[in-house]
Structure formats: structure tokens, C-alpha cells
Amino acid sequence: MGKSGFESKEEIKAENSGSLHASAVEEFSVADAESGQRLDRLLSARYEEYTRSYLQNLIRDGAVTINTSYAKTGEKVQTGDRIRIVFPPIQLLDVQPENIPLDILYEDEDLVIVNKPKGMVVHPAAGHYSGTLVNALLYHCEGSLSGINGVLRPGIVHRIDRNTTGSLIVCKNDAAHRAVAAQLKEHSITRKYRAIVHGRLTEDGTIHTTIGRHPQQRKEMAVNVPGGKDAITHYHVLETFSRFTYIECQLETGRTHQIRVHMKSIGHPLLGDDVYGPAKCPFPGLQGQTLHAMTIGLIHPRSGEYLEVEAPLPAYFSDLLSQLEFC
Image (cartoon, rainbow, N blue to C red; front, side):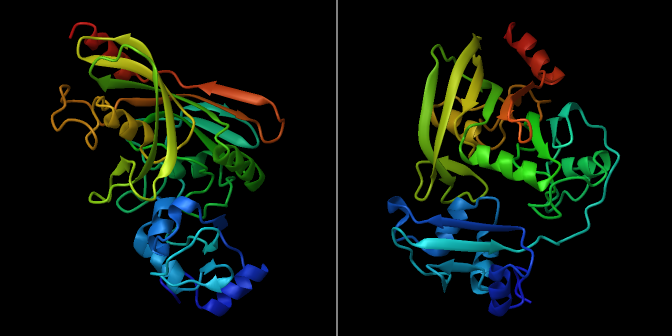
């Protein structure tokens, strides 16, 4: 069996014919700006949730084709090349339901919108195999979650960082998952965040860059790097303090660490951000960035009506705002 989970290229052929179940099949055409890149680097930039070594194993196992031909890891792509990737079902561990209290903002037969607390990881990963949102959801929903993203991420259609709080959509069935994923891809979902940033901002603005993996720091993202994806953040000043500014950010796109990276890029990193902010936090007890996914709005996958949900500011955030008035 290959390292990615497939046994052989013959099994990939069977998969492509529909005789086996796969967690996802992705297809795209190479854009002009991507022409000349190595395939593994291109895939790493496009699929940031996977490590490059995992994607390289997919290529070696025959799960990636270029214009219907099996691809090679170091192969260079050209404009218009059609890339097809078969992601195998993820069966790395048996994720257990856990009776962890959830703050449910909205729930019906298709969706759950939760208010994720600070410090909670969304889905199991290395070092976090219990206590995650997925563990809690499996208990709350009694296993009735979409299966498109495999056993590690049932129901999860998008994510927020561990230390970001607020609204997160979870899908209970595959039909709802596909409908919400399509809206995310079209950037039609309303996503408004609240944040506290270093420095004084006096005017609203828009940040439009590309965002991709940092060329030296692989756990970080950066603006305007080769292979980066288009990223747009609108910010609105809510209140200005002597050394900080309270803002609302609305996303047009949803790139990894987008708000954190964008605000750093204009010299106003998020208060408490231990990756993109100053080395020393002026509030020692603060756990990570002050970022809250307050509002989320989407077209309901069953009713076709617009649904908008708001997560109230967490207590730590409100307390900080009160303290800043006297700083």
C-alpha cells in the first residue's frame, strides 16, 4: 500500500471509474501565473491543509494526473494543464465522541452553527486527538455529520484557528456540505470578524494581496509570495485607543491566517498574536490573537433562504476592550 493510502495505480483507475469510495476528487486548470512551477509546489500552495510530503506521496501513488497522464513529483506544469487529484479516504484513527459542552447558535436537520471557544482545536491532528470540536460534535450529533472530509473532519466545511473564537458552520449531511462548500468557493458567505490590532487606525480600508506559504517559515503564511492565492480583507474602524484599534474585518476570501497576515502586512498585527505579532504581549495572560468570528451568513442549503447568525463577544474580549479605555 502506498503512503497516501492507495495500493497501486490500478486501484486509482478503479477509483476513477467509480468502483471505490474516495473522500474527495479535485480538478483545476493551471493559471498563467502558475505556469512553470513544479507540480508538488503548486499543489502545496493550493492545498495548504496538507503537507508537501503527503501530496508528493499522492503523486507517487498515481493519485494525480496531468491531462489524464500520471504525474511526476518534479514535473513542471504549463498554462491550461488539467490537474486531477483523488484524495483517499482518511482512516488514520478512530475519533471518539466526547461529552464536551457546545455553545450552539443555530441547529436544524442540515446544519449546526457553533460558537467555538478559545483554545479549542477544530479537528484532530498531531498532538490533538481528543478535546476537539469534532469530538464534541460526534457526541452532540450522535454521529450524524457529513462524511465528505473523512473520519478526521466529519461535518467540517471550513475552519478557524485554535485561538480564534466564534461562528463556525458544521454540516450534518453530504448534500448540505456540498452546498455550503460551493458558497465558500464562490466567496458568497458573509464572514465578519472583530479584532484588536496594535497601533492607531483612523480610516477604513481594504487589503488586497496574494497569500501563500512563507518561503522560510513553513508554519507561517505571507503576502505576495510565489504561488500565493488572491486574498481580500475589508476593515472598518470601530474604536481607537491610545495604542490599539478595535476593528471589524469582512472577508471576501478565506485564506489560512488571512486577517492575521493582512493586518501584519500593513503594520497593525493583532493584539496577542504569538506568530505574527510582537514578541512581547502587553497583556501577559492573553492566550493568542484577539480575533472573533462574530457574524456568519449563508443561503440555507435546503430552504434557499438567507440565514445569518451572530456570536456574542467572549468575556475575555469585552474585558480587554474595557481595559484599553484606560491604557
